[in-house]
Image (cartoon, rainbow, N blue to C red; front, side, top):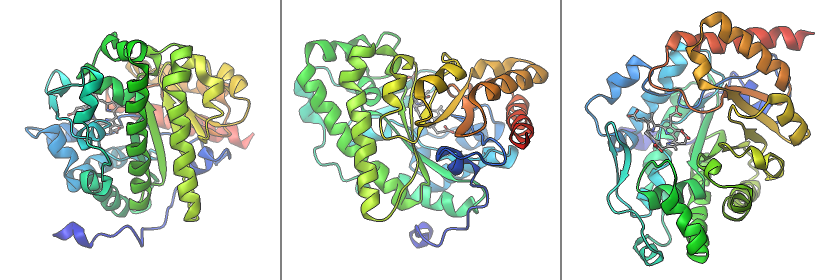
Length: 366
Ligand code: 1CP
């Protein structure tokens, strides 16, 4: 077929490296900015491409993923892109059936109930066989993006994926998954290790396919406290970064890695010593406090409250200015503290991006 001849080599030259430089702690000519969920339902053209199609069928089409990834770049001067996919492709690759039900979100047909259910999971997952469609999407997108901005690959972190696999979908208490941590700690660690092994191969495959940075989403960190986080999340986050970096180094490669542990403000110090170049922050953390607590060890990414995009444009500009003053312009990537919501106005997203560029250009010239 057509995409068999699209190979992960001879990629167009990168024209805007502000994101990669900020990730490595430098101070580019302006602060780079992108938004989590920048490919999403707030864009009418996204809704049009997605209309009437199954969500995971869309994820399995490299052409559709490429188109959805490129859409926000046509509208806004973002400094990075993130491949359109989902974190739940990993549980699928491990043998669990997941559907995206309209109005309900991700739904597992048969979630894990007891430790015996771990036997239902596929051992030794071949990521190239099960997730090769994501690698194809990355390669195609890296070519089609024409070097405009870097392409970020991503994964869910082990604890976040474990919680979906046990809850069977979204949850407010995550009590089924947390029950495992307190009642079945050893099987919990076994599951987290299985997930970590798949995630490492998955991230390496994404880099081989053309991803220029990697973000690990620990979206459900906040449901843990500091003690459980240190036992069930942090060791695996560290293991992922160390193993990915070691394996890349063997091939003379290196890509910046971002850890986004939502609501894990209690673990900011630990996260800044976890082998990631960048720590992503949600909006509950004060920018100056985050700088003090991470002590220049990492670059920071975030963290405007997504709901600030409901404010008038002038107010967005003021909020961005304050945020930039708090973080400073070195080793900083502007973003929201979580993803864009479907009812957000693309014009206000444009105002956010414009404000980051405008305020940071004047700041870096001082
Ligand atoms: O049809 C649709 O548009 C459904 C909405 C949607 C989208 C746009 C889902 C369902 N997933 C995605 C794409 C997606 N998911 C991306 C790529 C697009 C981009 O960022 O531009 C990424 C990075 C994700 C990652 C993801 N999926 C996370 C981690 C980030 C986060 O939001 O914390 C999580 C938790 C998911 C699970 C998921 N997928 C979709 C929904 C509605 C959810 C959340 C379900 C819940 O817990 O209630």
